[in-house]
Amino acid sequence: KNQVEQSPQSLIILEGKNCTLQCNYTVSPFSNLRWYKQDTGRGPVSLTIMTFSENTKSNGRYTATLDADTKQSSLHITASQLSDSASYICVVSANDMRFGAGTRLTVKP
Amino acid sequence: GAGVSQSPSNKVTEKGKDVELRCDPISGHTALYWYRQSLGQGLEFLIYFQGNSAPDKSGLPSDRFSAERTGGSVSTLTIQRTQQEDSAVYLCASSLYQSWQVADTQYFGPGTRLTVL
Image: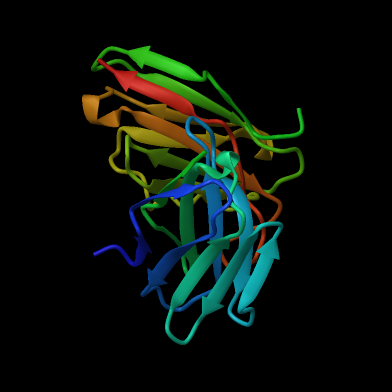
């Protein structure tokens, strides 16, 4: 069983709508949690990095939350744009890095 | 350039051949990582270089895979006797510091798409 589970596997929303992606992990101990955006055919790009003591971090229209007690994180995208169509990957670092399988987001006009 | 670069961008090879994939990290970055991403799958860690320390090879799937980093900069990932299951996108990333325990951004290259026929 993957130690980093992301949901949903895929999501389709209309342009301008908000959405929330989930990441649950069992990795322990915990150092930091990252969210990446990966456009098709490109390398991942870092969106946010959060440590144990942080419970929210924003990067423009992207806001990540972290609950280290329940081992859950979410990535909220506000006022989605067509360019937000991509895979979003959650990565949890402890003694190594554990990757989620990603959520494939499609934003339609 | 300012980012991580990888070459070639695409590589098609025949089963059983050896291939070399190159990564040029961002200048001054001490940590360098190789990952593999198979079609529709998540990222898979392969190997990690941190400064002059011995690399962490714990993610290499078999002894056909090896990597080196010369002069603390450019890295080469070598796959010997390629198999069809080696077909994937191979991504390289670098960061200023060791980033597993430090909240340090990893910068990824565009990847090399390897196809083994």
